[in-house]
Image 1 (cartoon, helix red, strand yellow):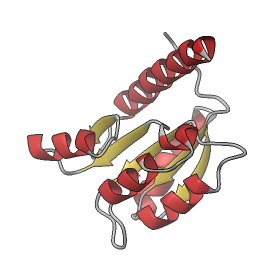
Image 2 (image 1 turned 180 degrees about the horizontal axis):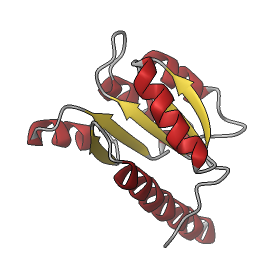
Image 3 (image 1 turned 30 degrees about the vertical axis):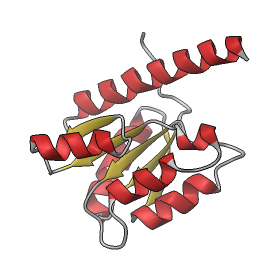
Length: 144
């Protein structure tokens, strides 16, 4: 399923300003609407306050100074609002050991991309998860 990214909303969580700007530029060229957070605690607050217009996905750095990506993802997954709690989260990190990849999944993130992130892999991963997420939402709405 080929999913268009134009008009999708992303929360880009990255403490490194240069990495954030590069990722933002790539995404905006694809028509993605990018909101930014420079730490995990800010990301959690932005997700909580996105009820009227939730994010379509989150790109989450892991190593950040105040709240790391693992804790941020854990708090997002624990939100009472199930739509907000289930937003696809894709980790973007230089931590690439099997243990790191396992921990990403263990805290509820959907995918692991290693830094530096290859643009085609990033876009492909986002499209895959958005397509799966939209399909699941469609199936759930039929049941309700």
